[in-house]
Length: 296
Ligand code: BG6
Image (cartoon, rainbow, N blue to C red; front, side, top):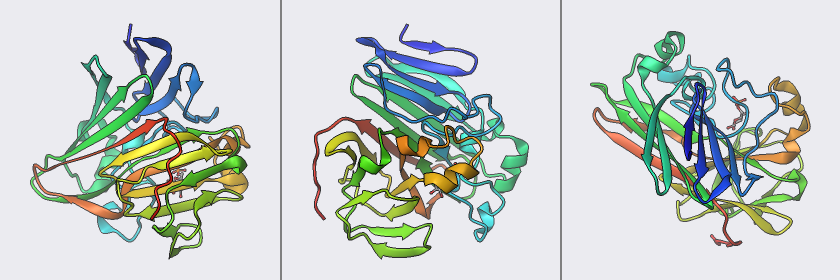
């Protein structure tokens, strides 16, 4: 069977290779695992809660309608960090294509817990997540529709946790020349380094990066992951390192930060306004590619 649904999960298996699979938890429509010929591409905490009691630590959590905490923005000031999409039970809408193998999930106000929904001024919306698996790639696409009679603002982000062998041997490429907001230092600057490397906690928002630039995660000179964006202007690069990992109860093992890096494409450096009836679409494609240095 290529698409298997259980009470809690949906599992896609590539028809040509049973070890090329994606597993999605209905809670948060969170991609938990993606293997290519048996090799895991994503990082998932062994302490992640998969019972719907909390957003998942690892995989690809979905961030909507706010990125981070925005206490100064009236419309979202009471929402929890990263909003409610990652912590709501999405509906499985079924398989929509055989080639590539494609499934969809939906989220509307009726799926969101009242105590969370009431913190977002009762706005009406429909979210459709599409997940496509090929032999070498995983694509996640989002459609956000304003089904209300007034405009509203939102952030969107795919909080993608990528699996790596050793963070200290890992670089992230193709970001020089971009405007960066460092969330730890709380300053903005132009990125001058040819690559991002990791020797401590990193939490940066690269802003308005052209979609033509693919982000590559490079391990010991070899490209491990390539991420292509469509209509996702910002790229967050995050690794919690030692202290921050200690503070997250669901982050296990505690030295798991060595084996993950988050590359999170989104629309988060400003809010996107959606008019009544308007639909906004965006996607990320994860695939294997050769090393391509895309100069400024
Ligand atoms: C990243 C943010 O996107 O998510 C970080 O840039 C944050 O600041 C991280 O710490 C994890 O957030 P959470 O809510 O999943 O612990």
